[in-house]
Amino acid sequence: MSLSILTSALGLNIGATPAPSSSRGAVSMDLGRPLRVAVVGGGPSGACAAEIFAKAPNIDCTLFERKMDNCKPCGGAIPLCMVDEFELPPEIVDRRVRKMKMISPSGREVDVGRTLKENEYIGMTRREVLDAYLRDRAVELGAKPVTGLVQKVEFEDADGPYTIKYSEYKPGEKKGTPSEAEFDIIVGADGANSRTAKAIDAGEYNFAIAFQERIKIPDEKMKYYEDLAEMYVGDDVSPDFYAWVFPKYDHVGVGTGTVVNRPAISEYQAAIRERCADRLGPDPKVMKVEAHPIPEHMRPRRVVGRVALVGDAAGYVTKCSGEGIYFAAKSGRMAAEEIVALTAGGTRLPTEMEIKDTYLKKFDAAYGPTYLVLDILQKVFYTNNGAREAFVDMCASDYVQKVTFDSYLYKKVQGNDPINDIKLLFNTIGSVIKGNAIAKPDRTFSNPVESLKRL
Image 1: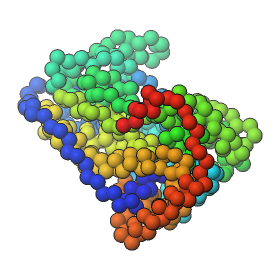
Image 2 (image 1 turned 120 degrees about the horizontal axis):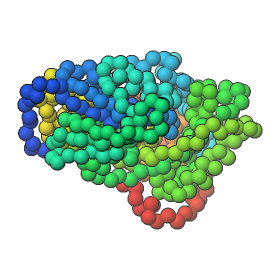
Image 3 (image 1 turned 180 degrees about the vertical axis):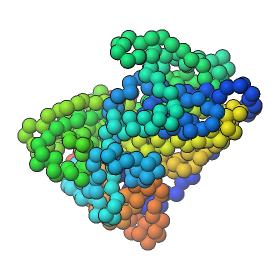
Image 4 (image 1 turned 30 degrees about the horizontal axis):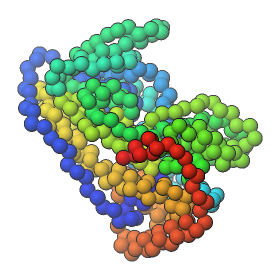
């Protein structure tokens, strides 16, 4: 989240690479039936895709979700622009964060948020509430919900038709019923461990592991976090990521993540608990323990035939911040909108090339620079304690704070102020020198296999 701060401040204006295309031909239709679309996964990406398909003419949309009341482990932060863009009601947002506290390895604290306007905030949500709302809206518009675990996607030709084999869980039944159905188009929104991606040989990606505890704390301690989130950096809490304390509805989420030393995630969690112990009070109650994979980069193949991947299944999580909710919802909506347009009112099947040349090219052009810059920033500022100290020091700048929040809240690259960019360059050099002078040495760890995996 907060590392999108520096996107334009460092003057990195980078364009996206055009997506590859295929030469398969379009198929005109006169089937005497609607097009059959399956959306696999009922999180933000799947729900937002299903909503678009449900509103489209001559398209029948089936939405598969293995657990309709699923509580996905997630920090839950959403940018301000998502509230209006996706027409989210006020009650979806549990907390409106207007202040952040950045804490360096040496314990220096920098308050961030003084450049925010009165009506600006970062929304904190619970995924079980947000996902259910988006999913229910799609169903109300006509998407057919199926509580089922998709186990396999079979096809003889990449262009389909596609047979989805799944276990359907009906009300009151603990054991799933083996079922299958045939579809013309599939949108894979089934997360980091996507079976849809596996079926189309989308390619592997490296991943981080995120660990979070939902913790109930005394009311007087919760008051401190009323509109405040904390971000901790240091090799004690993560060798390549950050740790956090995020306010929720009536509790806080405390967590961390790593890719290069995943086996030590419990040690890093213990360290963040120790660093924020005074603020949580003497008797914090752990309500729930959560862990989940976070994709580290986009899949090598995101569209194969008439199967398109969105959200975590496609790898749409930013480095540095681990942000994925907005990009999941946006990619699901964008993919569905482009596919619906290509079907010409449900009268033709789009080609692989057409889906790539619309959905992928537009998504990559809009957000590719953000992913690339955040990747660079993570490599620069999360490599050692000296760089982490410099990062926190830089966050004291009003210019950095304004660029960060504007870029994050509205998902548009901000800045391009030559004078302040030059000032920032010199201030960055000074911060790096100072950070390396005061930083404690990084602890060594031996995990050579995973340490070499970061892409």
